[in-house]
Length: 404
Ligand code: HGY
Ligand code: MN
Ligand code: MN
Ligand code: MN
Image (cartoon, rainbow, N blue to C red):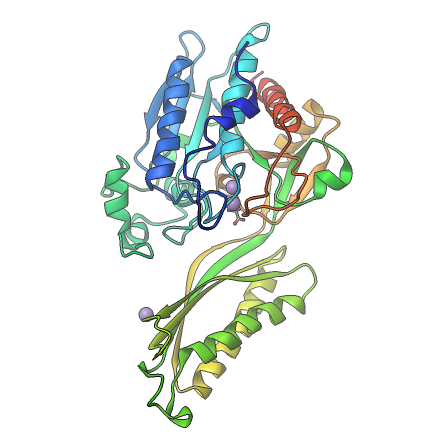
């Protein structure tokens, strides 16, 4: 009898805990993520899977039927990094469910006849280097190697430096089309980041779409000076323009049905209480089903921030960090998932995933597991042990159907 899903997850409970923010802080290619990656590789090796780290830092753990090669494989997996102060399930649930589903398949009657790979993608949240789904974007060509190599984190560490510590050669990252040339299907299981299943009273759902979403980084350059000797009328204080920028995001998104606008991250430079900042940064996230609406919101917000900068005698720069259009998962694959899991409702969600990136190159689907709090990217994100197990059983059922 192999280890139940919740018990596998419990093995990760002490890795990357954040005593200050609560929850977990496991930045991409950082110590905690690498410790989790090592745990996964060991678990996969223990199951006799052939484990490899590809040139983009993606882990592939292969099970090949007797005498077969890797063509026509079904793959499943997720990510192990987290947002700052994130929950324990966002990412890791999909990874441990892949291990559990593999165990359940192997305990089954006869193991199906397609190659199977369990996969783990690095830096899905983009919390460290700013670009979400960094690994899956690199391997599919959605992010250029040059752009990836130019990225730095908040402490000034560069992506190449972090990549090297993670066993990735930054000079060889980049598109890897042959890796996906004939993958039969990819299914990612993920904790639901909302209340859909809780309200429907169901443990598992099938994904249908993901909102279009993007992220932007705003730099507001003013004039640093002394808090006590600088008259109010002589100031060029970027923090004042930043205050209006936060409201600009909120108010623009509130005016459009189903839009989402968030400012979750700020920075004042140099950041002294008795110092007028010379520069203020904010990052915002916009989402809507229709990407032209996201673009329209961006235009309105950018215009308002520039005007606020103007009033304050500051200069404003707006940099796009990432953008993805609405994802609609492969309808044929979804039909097969629905046939395999007839009780599972279909969900449209606002959260991005590596599956959303891979959907552009291979038939891709998602399964979601009920999260009673409906909260995510926060410590009280969760799933009951029974639902976590139901998710793995559903994943094993889905994989078996897809591997036939
Ligand atoms: O931000 C997202 O939508 C996902 O949780 N990475
Ligand atoms: Mn996730
Ligand atoms: Mn997330
Ligand atoms: Mn600049």
